[in-house]
Amino acid sequence: MYIRSFADSNGDGLGDVNGIRSRLPYLRDLGVDAIWINPWYPSPQADAGYDVADYRDIEPAFGTLEDGKALIAEAHELGIRVILDIVPNHSSDQHAWFQAALASPPGSPERARYLFRDGGGPDGSEPPNNWRSVFGGPAWQRITEADGSPGQWYLHLFAPEQPDFDWENPEVRAEFCDILRFWFDLGADGFRIDVAHGMVKDPAFPDIDYPADDALLAAHTESRPYENQPGVHDIYRSWRQVAEEYEPERIFVAEAWVPTAHELAAYVRADELHTTFDFTFIRTAWEPADLRARIQTSIDAHESVGAPVTWTLSNHDICRHLSRFGRPQEHRSADPLHVADNGETDVALGTTRARAAILLLLALPGAIYLYQGEELGLPEVEDLPDDVLQDPIWLRSGHTNRGRDGCRVPLPWTATGSSLGFGSNGSWLPQPTEWTSLAAEVQDTDPGSMLNLYRRALRIRREELVGSEATMAWVDLGSDVVAFDRGDDLRCVINLGSEPCPLPDGEVVLSSGDLLDDGRLIPTDVAVWLRPG
Ligand code: BGC
Image (cartoon, rainbow, N blue to C red; front, side):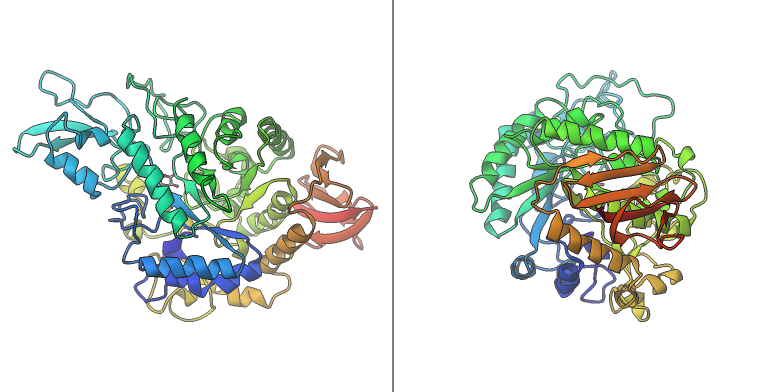
């Protein structure tokens, strides 16, 4: 759950732990078997909680540790596991360790937990190298020493309020194993690992030869000297051992942005992490040949290490997929967030494709993470007024990149009321008025709604595919059609061509849209699950 936008229990406009608790029955009815909660730790919120000031507590604006424990217990009673979000690449600049580092001299053990370096140039006034922050601007910030003199520089790959830890320091490694145990002991079932490809840096800290058109948040077509370094795998081997101390074993899911499926699979080798997000559908246009090829590449790479693929269409960092798929597919930019993609969004087209896309993903072998609101068919909010934007990307890009707020707008639960049932007193980002018709309560009773499509598909998947050995085999129904069997009982067929295609023989189990010609033709952008005849 993107906690600040899920449900607000106390009327401060910000979602919270008790808001999630109040909506657990909704999640059970949706059919999920686990929830991932974005960082809920005490944080000045310079990057919406990804700037953690204390890894062993809960942000007061979100609730208390007792609320968190109650949430874990109640979720477990409903058969829902709880995955927290660990942020190991950097802390907040308000973290006690960073404050101690600022108060201590260069070369001290306190400084050695972060990446402090002397500056370049005759007087140290140049940054130590030319690395850029993922959010824009330089990745180094100069400090003022305790005696008031201009001081060393520290590395922050994200905002200046997010100083990077030095993972060569054994104290940092030990601290994070201890933090994992703290939450595992409280019953957390696992962790999503933020910037899992980060943490370890090339010790030479070499300058980077940046391309002239370097996109914000690197496109990850090649790894930089602070990404995907071989040493990161040793950290995960030790984390795996921590997870295995518990019964039942706890799990990890990595957010690792790496160039190839093969490199991604290295994170889920048998002695490393259990799962890692596969961003295939975020990087692929709605185009059959590319979809087929990339799905197969991911499956092959994961099979080579014996791990399941973890598919996803959207998350809190990326333009919602309904809007991505509703734009001209040939004009997609290299920006991995897709915020700056060209072309008008056709919401109706995006909705049709999003309905088909979820049937595609849910039929694939492996796991899938949904991003809250996709089950309601929410589009990206592309017209948020400038003065409400909060993502640090907006500021640090010099107001050229609007950042990620458009996918973070609080959920509509009811058709009326303050903030459409999100809370009792407004919401931290304004919701579009059209969202009244997308509210969960409206969709609940509409058999044709996106919500009910998700519920039905998740139920069928749970009954027929979860835990099944059914392998996947492509079925050739022409170049415009993506089709495959899962074992003998389920066939998934998606028509991505511009003309209707014939429905293969079999009994239709579920379809993302109405069929044509008395059920004999599948229209463009419609997916069908059927029992092969
Ligand atoms: C998170 C972002 C966050 C960044 C820095 C990402 O991968 O998903 O929301 O801004 O890490 O922590």
